[in-house]
Image 1 (cartoon, rainbow, N blue to C red):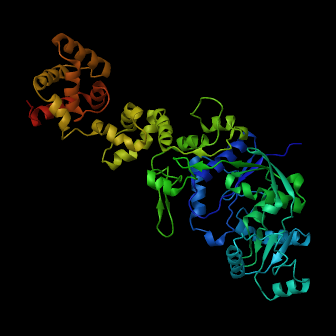
Image 2 (cartoon, rainbow, N blue to C red):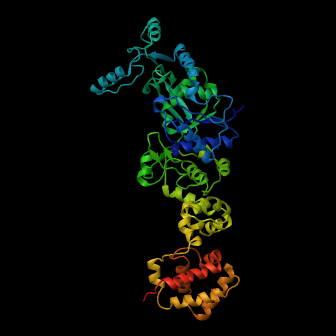
Image 3 (cartoon, one colour):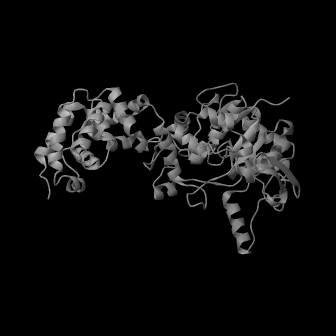
Length: 510
């Protein structure tokens, strides 16, 4: 019988959540939802030295903004609580000792200073130091010391670690859902630390294996940086006798710099002007980092963009709702090679979502910006203005520059446009047009367009000359939508007032 799908996102609270981490969470979430499974959030805070206050809250807020729902874990609870590893510390020592007793691990009493001196000795001989089968019985470990000596050292409070006893010259065969079959010789691996007495905490290797087993995780979907640890994790499942319950592994490709070389970093974003974190971050020391939310991205556009960095739906489709991503997602279509991040493509996705938003949705987002500029209008007018210009916008923040003339009459006129159109017969033509507009009772877009175009045709005027001169009066610059969008929006009285302002205040050129 197939095991129920249970996946986990297990970040460390060592700073803001990188978008690579968000993508890992997203792929876990899509996989869980696709298979009717459970999404677990576990906080792996065993590295007390690198813990950053506020980072856990940042992770929770980021996932919420992205629409990645947690079924079980931190912030939600569940049958395997607690879900913070620092609150589970009592669990791990038992399992570490079990490995020592079964011969799969051992106590090591060497200090950091002693190991550092040993490394330097090896370097001086042009050799690489590895803590493995070749040296572990020559160092102060439970493999070289008597049981009495080991017990005495522990009793007097000497610091120790428990290391995994990596087998010598054995082939570990592994299967990855993305990368296929992998084989590694254990003689190339060292004896990793599993538990440290100094802070009474396990390392990632022990804690994640024990927790995945106790939380009944069926699939481990994580970044490729953990691929070198896979042989150790396979061997830990064997050492505990859990091979029948071992999860299936999938290691995701890296997110690469826009230039393609190397992992995407905050430095790349700072240098090239784009965020690499979902939300704005301010560290306890005052360091800040930009966020997609604060830069004006829609969460659904951000998630859509991220989903396609490493996963290919197999079709030409690029715009996916979260439900469509769930329906189409599969690990088989995740790439082995790194995915190059493209800042312009991220903006393109946001623009697509902007263009498909309804006037009502846009009004809700645009109203705070209008109020910042002292504009108090109905949602209907705010949405209508945004709707007329949304095809030219990438972000909600673009809308003020694109639509301000709907709400504020020009007090200055673009010099280039004025020089081009406020000369010759154009001022007289605008006076005539003013009279035509003053005589229109039904000022709807269609009716105004019909009457004005009839007048232009009758007089033999140039449509471009008339419209661009009118644009100068109503907008003050060579931008904006069709002129009848503007006249119908601002109304007859305001249209005539703006024409009068231009006629009164700007001296025609030659």
